[in-house]
Amino acid sequence: MNVLYASAEVAPFAKTGGLADVAGSLPKALTTLGCRVAVLMPFYKCVRGMGLDARPFKIEEFDFLKHSEDGVEYVFLVNDRYYDRENLYSEPHGDYADNDMRFSHFSKAIAAFAAQSDFKPDIINLNDWQTGLVPIYLKLRSSDIKTVFTIHNIGYQGLFGKDALERIGIPRKFYNIDGIEYYGKISFLKAGIVYATALTTVSHGYSKEIITQEFGCGMDGILRTRLADLHGIVNGADYAVWDPSIDKHIKINYTAESIDKKDECKKDLIKVAGLPDEVRSRPLIGVISRLAEQKGIDLLVDAAEDIIDLGASMIILGTGDEKYNDLCRRIANAHPQYIASHVRFDNELAHKIEAGSDMFAMPSRYEPCGLNQLYSFKYGTLPVVRATGGLEDTIIDLCADREKGNGIKFYNATKADLVDAIGRAIELYKDKAAWKTIQKRIMGLDFSWKASALHYKELYEKLDGTRH
Image (cartoon, rainbow, N blue to C red; front, side, top):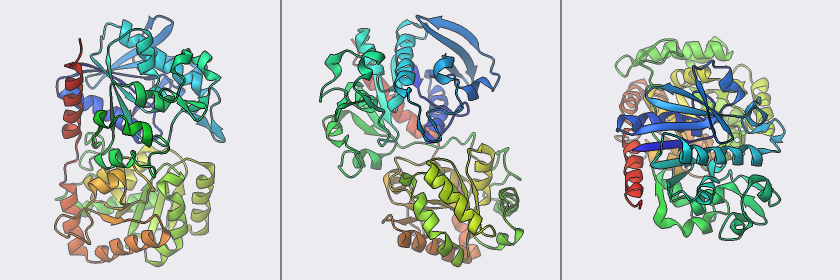
């Protein structure tokens, strides 16, 4: 089976969040199941700087580069006018004004590659709003290639004025309440939801949440019309990248059997993060996140002094909304002896945080799947999470079940509940023998991509079997 996997970001080439991790891992897992996979993404400025060995080719008006790695064929869409920029989607003060043109061009190129290339995909797996127009462009080509549209975060909807219709080459007949119209605008996300053959989202819990008014972000009604085609498949962790026994970014490699070496990683993290050596005696809480309201960053900042009073320290890594960037900088500046904040993307530091932290905080207001809690298991770092979406699916609270528990959960998105949860984790941490037992157990959990990739392959085969 030939699978074309299209995503606006793919690790390790370009990343703003979990979408890139999934797009970097799932295709490789599919190849181990016998699929031939091509991954298509824009050729951003950051990819240009990687010096890849890539071969140019052209289909219709679209310029591509092809690069093979780890059994996957990577295809990059080249258009310097649209993609040769410092960031993927936005400037510090807002989205790029021409994102409608940038990602309609991407979607047209996906359809052209699918229809005209020698790859000849049986299935196209699309991801998030940046690829939402592809099913329409395929219709306009009279193509019968089946499409799977994966929703990673329904809060990002690709909304543009209806005046964009002509610019992006979508006939007016698609602009109606049952099509891509959304409260007087165009929604690229809605296009994917309405016109794709099947829909997936990144956890079972999130598939249930997004059909409700509370979590559907206005798309719950249209999603309820497609319940038979909506599948929740939890993301996996790529253990070729996230495994402390082989991780090249951390101070020393370790396993469950050599868990004591984790303390060397903690010592290294504290030094790299710029915290004083004295915090080694305190439980260290790691945070790697997009800095946004969705992620509960305001709750963490509000709780910072309480966390210090509980005897812990904290390291925050991430970038996002300028408001939250500033909040994180300010709280670190106010408590430099206990809190470090690094407002940037830094892959090496992210690995050091997973290895060197004792706990990992994810106080998300909603979380489609979450990946860092899965990485944290592997590194013997206890997740403290709000019970929502994929976090609810993957975390069993230790206070409710000491035998099977793998983290600490709280339910209300409030400072008080977050502080209580961290307090419970710290109480567990004080019993060193019990803590080590917990660490060893969670390091043995298997959240690899194998099972999830098999679910995707089975869905592809089901859809492909319906082709005429």
